[in-house]
Image (cartoon, rainbow, N blue to C red):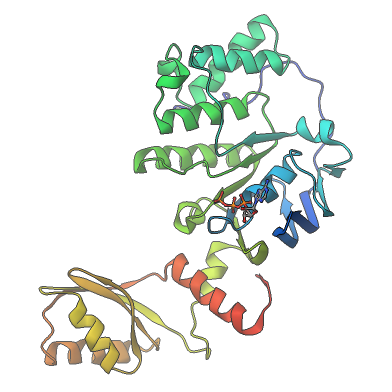
Length: 345
Ligand SMILES: Nc1ncnc2c1ncn2[C@@H]1O[C@H](COP(=O)(O)OP(=O)(O)OP(=O)(O)O)[C@@H](O)[C@H]1O
């Protein structure tokens, strides 16, 4: 994506808006029930202005339902959502002027080109003549759509379509952007480009709320992570504090993760770990495994590696890993199932 510094600021001469509050979004005791499905259960959280927040949960966890309510597209059964001190149910029109919404699916118009599509929406947002053309060009430049300007919408790849949807959201230069699974189905290059775009928007002081069911997709680009599981919020804090605070075993002992490669089948390590206390299997691969060591003492690690060799394991490579977010998350869920509380760190 070829963003230039000026390219995200709308060029329309709009009146100067009032300053936004420090706490841009406040969600309190939010509930949504569909027939007999309690999709969102008593969720509360705040989002500070300028933050990039990752909203993570498995399929069916309640992400889209929560986001649709924030985007004024659905109404809670109980609870409140306030964006810039405005209640989304009572003042949807004013809230909409502040937010951008990128749905996980969007309709295509077979005979419209990328330019025509953006031009159509820019017209709907009230951009007139030259301003409209300038704005559409700015957005196409930012979202790397310029080369696709004349391409019919129904001839776009998944990644191109995501960029178009992203561009559409950027047209009115929203302060708060709600993005539902924007990186789903993107190839690694497109995902990296998307991360860069998010970083650029964050640098310009925008606030973003981004959902994904893949933790590692969001870990690096978000200031804060918010986890939802079965409609309930189970964690609200930074990726770093998740790694730090949930890097311990249930009995409070420190742990290490070791990635080992063998010149032989990975199940040798699975068997070895099952026979050695302090060691357990995290993940078996064809030619190795990731093992968890219930200690932070380097001597325990060294003794374990020596024993592996003496036990005849053909170890050809090993390294200590940063604890993965996924592991920390699983660990946290395990602790929550023990004491039943939401984690705020
Ligand atoms: N309009 C609806 N009517 C009935 N049930 C619904 C409706 N919308 C969502 N649900 C249910 O609410 C639950 C949460 O769905 P939601 O789409 O919010 O999850 P999600 O976390 O976004 O999942 P995904 O990643 O699969 O999109 C699911 O059990 C879903 O079937």
